Length: 244
Length: 244
DNA sequence: GGACTAGGCTGACTCGGGTCAAGGTTCGAT
DNA sequence: ATCGAACCTTGACCCGAGTCAGCCTAGTCC
Image (cartoon, each protein chain N blue to C red):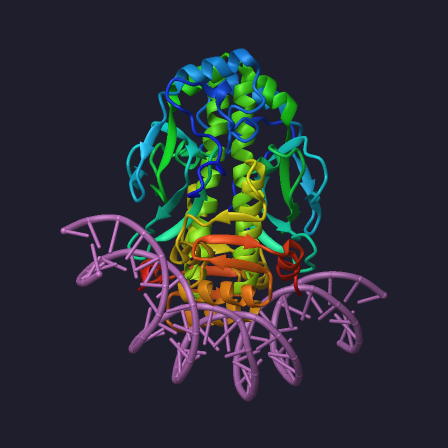
C-alpha cells in the first residue's frame, strides 16, 4: 500500500463524500443524494493515523464507527487470560470499523493502523438519529452488517479443517477480490501486514506462511518481493483452495 | 434436548409472544408492549420441523427470517467446488436464523433441524416496514446482528491456533453459557448434534472429538453418556481454554 | 557509513491430530 | 426379538505444521 495512487479514497481536506472515490464500497454507496449529503455532514475531516497507532482499544466503551478512507488496519483481540494476540481481520478503504461493538456497547478488540491511514469518524448516536428518518440508510447499514457476518462465516469455513496452503490461497484470493472491488489491480498489490499478522489471522505459524509463500512462488503461482505481491495464476490458487 | 421441560419456548397454538418463555433472549426482548404486539402479529403459528428436515436450503433466495421457538438446528455450508460440508454453527431457542442472508438476498448455507423443532417465520419485508415506524425494534435488530458478528469473531479466535482440547473446552463452555441464558442448567444438557457435527464445526476429526471427550471424562471434567453431557468443573475447562 | 532492530527465510526435530480400520452401541423399523 | 443403519469408540500409523535456532536483509537512527 505504499503506492498511494493504487488505493483510492484519499479525501483531501475540504472535500466531501461525493468527491471521494470510494462510492460503491463504502456505507455511503447507493444512497440518494440528500441522504448522502446529511451523512456527509456527520463526518469530520478524515483523521490521520500513523503506522502502529491504535484507532480503538480493546475494552473501551463504544460510541463511534469509523469509515476507512485510505490505508489499512488490523483488528487484534487478546482473548481473556491469554497473552497471545489474535488478528481477527484486516480493514481496507471503504470498510466500516466497529460494527461488532454496537451490541454490547464496548469494543471487543483493538484496531491498529498497519500503515499511514485516514479514517472518518461517524458518531453512532447521530447515525442512529439519521437512520430514524431515513429508511435507505438504515437498510444500507443492515445489509452492510449482514455481509460482514457472511464474510466472517466464510472465514470460519476457510480455517476449519483446511491445510496451510488452502488457507493462504483463500486469503490471497480474498484480498485480491477486495482490492479489485476498490478499483485496484486484482493481480498485484502490497501486503500491508507482516507474515506474523497473516499467520495469526489464519491460525498458522509465521514460518509456515513464509514457507508456503515460497512454495507458491516456486510453483509459479505468485511472485513475492518483500511485501509486494503479484498473483500469476488465480486459477492455480483456486484449484488449491478447492482441492480434495 | 429430549427433556422438553428443559428447553423453554414451546408456543402452543393460539398463544403469543407474551406467553412465550423466551423473553430476554429473543429478538422480541426488551421491546415496549405495543411493539411486541405488532411484531407478534407478524409471526405465524410456529412451524414444526422434523429431525433432518431443512428449514432453508443453500442458494435459495432470502425473504424470511426465522426465530427458533424450541429444538435446535445446524447451519451447514458446502463451500464452492468442495464436497465436504462444513457446520458453520448451531441455533438454540430464541436465536434468529437468516441474518447473514439479508445483505446478498440469498442464503449462503442450509439450515437443518437437529431434532424436532418449532420456528416462527418472520417475513423480512414486513419486519422492515415495522422497523420504519419503530426505532426500538430497529435498534434491537441492529444490536442483535452486532452481537452475532461478535460471537463469530470469538469463534474465529477459538479456531485459530488452538489445540483440540481448547477448542472443545471453549465449545462446551459456550454451549453451557447459551443454555444458561435460556434458563436451562449450565451444568447438564443434551448435545443435539453428533460428534461429526461438532468436529466439523471445530475443524476436528470426529474421532478426535470422541477421544478428547473421553479424556475430559477421565480427568473428571465432564461426564458423558451418549448425548447427555454434565460439566463437572467449569473452572477446569476454563483453565484448559486459557492454557499457554 | 556503521550499528541496531524488526522482519523474513530456512533447516532440523517433534508431536498433535488426521486417516484408516475394526468393533461396539443405540435405536427405530419390521 | 431381529435386523440394519447411524453413530460412537479405540487402536495403529503417519504426515503436516509447530517450535527452536540460526542467519540474512532492509530500513532507521546516530
